[in-house]
Image 1: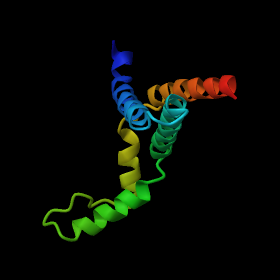
Image 2 (image 1 turned 180 degrees about the vertical axis):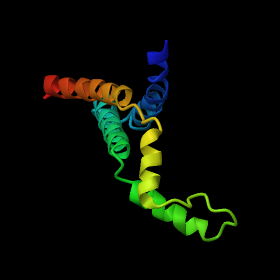
Image 3 (image 1 turned 120 degrees about the vertical axis):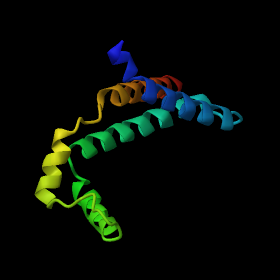
Length: 119
């Protein structure tokens, strides 16, 4: 059951994106094919963004924006140095990439196989 909870957000996001693409482009020739294809690409890019975020690429940006905002607060939220901030962020749990990646691969492969059959 715990594993299935990780698929709830990517699953709901997939249904919303796919249904929007499917029903808004219904008059076009390959609307269902494009709905699978575009949804798969979108979820693969989202999984890539999760992975990049987990690796700590945006730590510098978030720390510097936090320091700028701290100038306007009475009690600073980020009184620490950058190294301490990175150590604090590494202790927090990471985003799980695999549910989004797996759903994205499934939708992308359905669109790709369908496109290969039609073409």
